[in-house]
Image (tube, rainbow, N blue to C red; front, side, top):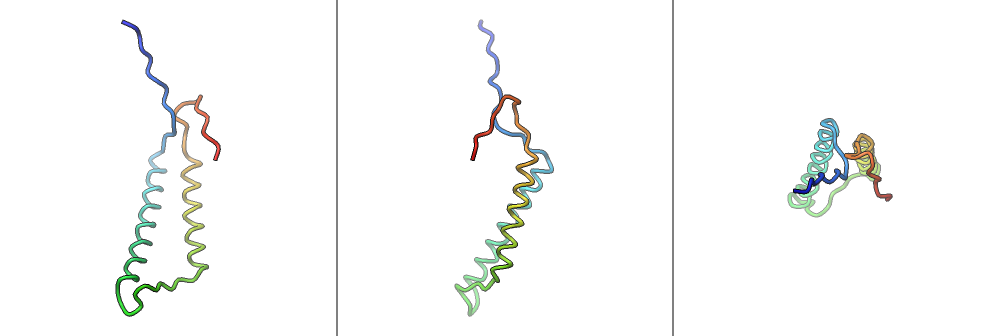
Length: 86
């Protein structure tokens, strides 16, 4: 019987802290969706959501920073793994 070696892992390992940060980002995005849908389907202002651009810009920037923090904390699953360039 031939000895088969397990294929090396490819990808990244996410720490528990990274998992919690991604969960927080997901919750924030879902909250924004609920707020948006809530305003679009109820009341006399149905279909119009008035949010200052500065607030939306800040919010998206904050999400980008959180995602960058999670990505920088990722550990390659295999030391020989070279991530694809993007």
